[in-house]
Amino acid sequence: MIMDSFNYTFAALRGIQAGREYFVAMCPLRLIPKIFYFNETDEIPPDLRAQRVLNRGRIPAISRYLVENQQDYVFSAITASIDGEVSFQPFADKGPLHNAGQITVPMSATFIVNDGQHRRAAIEEALKECPSLGDETIAVVFFIDAGLKRSQQLFADLNTHAVRASASIGILYNFRDPLAQLSRTIANQVPVFKGFTDMERSSIPNRSTKLFTLSGIYHATAALLKKSDGDDVLSKEQHLAIGFWTELSKIIPEWQDNIIRRTSSADLRRDYVLFHSVLLNALGLAGADLVAQYPDAWNHRLHALETVDWSRSNTNFWEGRAMIGGHLSKSRTNVLRTAMLLKQIMGLQLTESEQREISSSDLRSDKPEWEEAEA
Image (cartoon, rainbow, N blue to C red):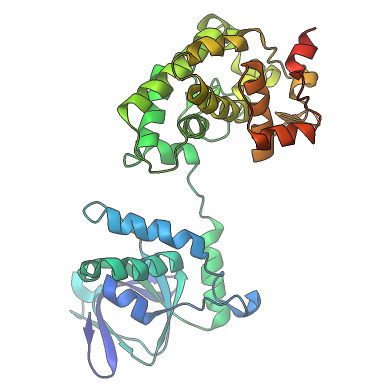
């Protein structure tokens, strides 16, 4: 890109969509915050903006990704509208170079980001920490602005058919996150998960032969190890996680190979809470406290789960915990309440906050309800 006293000049390729010219250029990262305008205030009514309000909570993670992966990052193109006079000078009057050339834009023009405002903001933050990134480039697709309505329509058209990838496939393809790598290993090695984990979808269709999702295993293992996205996972933690889920595969009757292979997946998911993320997460949470309280005997304590009735018809157990009104609920509250019940079953000490939760709910603090249900 060239700048003189009055204009920006970009080397660009010209294309046609819906009878209108548009241009694709490479722009140095250092210029992205300077020339691309984005109205970040939420005081302007939505119908007078060309974009949604910036979600600043997303910016640090994107900026950190850029800074920490300077040798191995990828950013998709930014889409912007140019509100101003634009001229295109092709390199040739005809032939292959007829649509390659330079666009010249006056410095008085306004560049409005239609798609990629969070990338623009993250680039600005990353440059403060690592100015050397400024010489790298990002592709920019330029449309010629035809007013606010056109810019709003561009935003709608760019996002209407965009489908965010499922959490499971994001974990499957993520080789930077140690927890994602561990989750893939667990899915491929632990008997109950091997062959029964949907590696691509985060919700299982009724006719699927799968029982679990990779994202469910990921979040449950994160709870077990008390890890967050991107945290390092030590070798001993990897062995603990694999050992924990493997031991449960041996202990829980419904998770044993001879059961799951002779019963349809749809029936198992319909009849038991065990094959849903609320229980998987609760087992991970309870397991974390189990390992903390009994680091050398946690596997023995797990055997208390052998006699639990995991069927959804056991409403004395699961209603108000894993289920609300007969329907499974994976809300944070329900996961926590289910984990508390599992901890009681294994004879674990509850925290003060958990004891308060029990005293203010239908859970009993003097005698675990699982014992009453069995009586």
